[in-house]
Image (cartoon, rainbow, N blue to C red):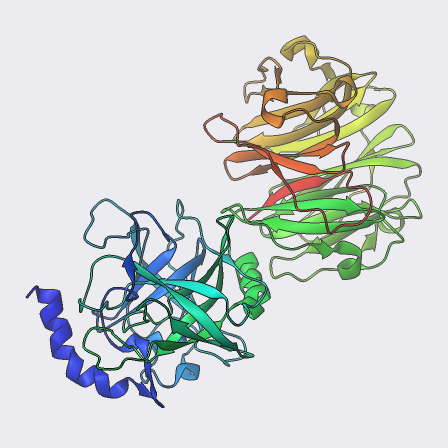
Length: 558
């Protein structure tokens, strides 16, 4: 018998006695491999985690819900598995490793194994559930989506896991089986295995998945206890199990993800007179929307807005119904500051029509178009603002500006503006001096008549995109760090046949993400990737937002 199995056999006597919880069996008390069901195809359920606690004296299963977090059962980490509520927040008592993306545990060169650095029990300690933070974030494995609604009685759910099977003490391949929901309780589910499927020892914390006909998969619960009918070493015939619900904890898991350091895209979308903020994680999942006025204060409706990220904070500029410009901050912990009136506190600007913002280090740079003039102000890390200075005094005039964008590269602020159907560029250097306006077409080639412009940094370069020909075209260019420009190239082949009414951009890690407002009231996002390629466009889920979705603004935060 292989060494790992001999060690498992020696542990059996001491672990079985600790396994009893009432009349059910806690699943976390024996090492081994998978749900007693059918072997899973290579690469399937890659977000399913095999969790080894200590020197494999206890193994469990879990599910990746974020590049930094795995959800599993709290009983995996307690001295007495019958007392999951005793799990302590912080570093696990025993060294714990998580293996992901390895359907066959014997396969080499597949998946990744990382240590667990922190445990975070569910906030109410009402169920056998914990979040385990990975010491090193995992990329390349898509997390499973957490459900926001409970399953119904009679519904079938799938459970993949690395616990025992009918014939193997310690199988090396992930298995899965189907289970019927018998009852839905406030914090859990009662299920029964179908066609001989059973949850076995080693499957504690296994993801309980709802699969749809369209192929979508979402996590509704994690396995906690079972009868273990038909599992190796068990004489029981019942295949019932008890699972801990996660659907009603989706908001808590989302907040944990939001507070975890790492690049995120923040989108502000207009919805009628309101402004809504949503966040995109690195795995591509988006949060639900927050109403900014409900969080930061009622300014009578939002006319125009801009956003900039500084570390984990999101700075929002919004023009209220009275024409004044307001500023608020969404902190990394999810709290919002109240709107502050910049017209009262910084400088009274009348006739505001456009605002743009970017960060340079810990400073927030704001450029405002008011009464046909451009003004610039800086908010430092301590929250102090400089007075609005006239940009034209340094750059020379530019008449009839209809669109405005800014971006930062190093210590420089890059500014683009549309005037007379053409886009112009200038920059403010670290010592506060400004350059003169230059026509971008002189360096990057002519386009059709320009109506909108967006800018974002990518490394030391600046990506610039313009909307042309009354929304029929979108052109893209790059201003390289040495000041040269790439020729304009059409993005129509990437975006498809759409009529564009607005565009925005943000540098997010090594990518540039663009948001495109369309005439049919959609918001499409697309990214220029680090290697120079482009992602396929995706539509934001704006169906729940009221009114017209115009003036989308993007930024990146850590």
